[in-house]
Length: 126
View 1 (spheres, one colour):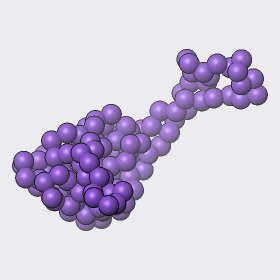
View 2 (tube, rainbow, N blue to C red; view 1 turned 180 degrees about the horizontal axis):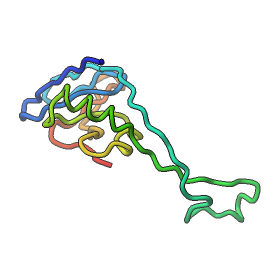
View 3 (cartoon, rainbow, N blue to C red; view 1 turned 45 degrees about the horizontal axis):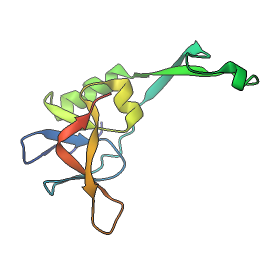
View 4 (cartoon, helix red, strand yellow; view 1 turned 60 degrees about the horizontal axis):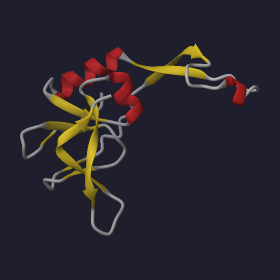
């Protein structure tokens, strides 16, 4: 069973990081990476979906996939980090798992680097 580090931001919001990089917040706190990769399955549900112009690509068949989560993973994480903790992860995982799996909203970049600093009071829920 993986171990997760829950960090309480200066505004009282609790977060855990399920990405492979440390996450920096504008209040100066850093949430360490847990390097846990959530399983996301993709179910192909629509052949040649709306918006795809088959005439432009006659040799191509396009399938629109819908991501879906592993339910047992959600329960395991929520039991370990608490039910009041926001879980920061990658976009596909956030889309598949829904609330409280989110992405951070960019505040700025660390001076002289490409490290992102996230806002402490805004998150993107897919």
